[in-house]
Length: 154
Picture 1 (cartoon, rainbow, N blue to C red):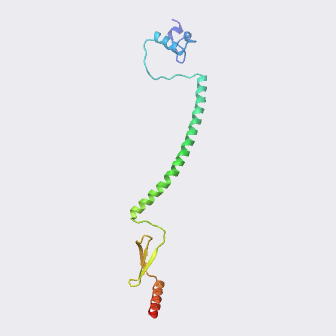
Picture 2: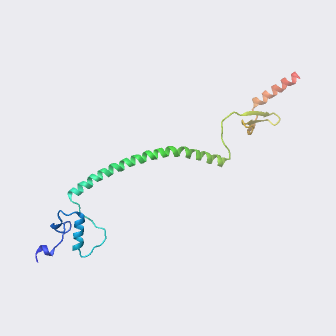
Picture 3: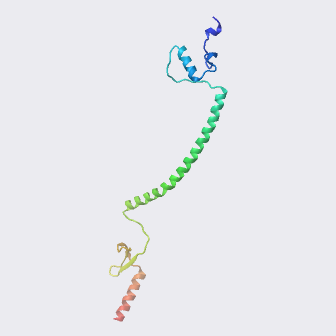
């Protein structure tokens, strides 16, 4: 036996020169006729230099594509953050209102004094009493002056 007959096949080499010039379909048909058996399975194929260069080119294309998609994702995330932040802020405010069972507002307040009790009542524009406090010394003095004036007139 010659050395070639002992080692009939070699990893990374063609079956033989007879398949040169055949299409993939013809090679497959030829292999089916010669094979001992046929099975489905995973395998590793060694690439030649031109195939490696092709994959390197594809690597660059995929990397550029991924970079563009990541930029687009970042822009979309920024846009979504801009839309989410106001809603999150409102949620926080509403939670605070529910927890405290009160709402802080700014607006016109109508003050009514009760000198007998020494209190000043504050009403909002809907006529609801929203706060009360003791009369200040000035408010007490002013009221006394007005009462004295009214008593002098009557």
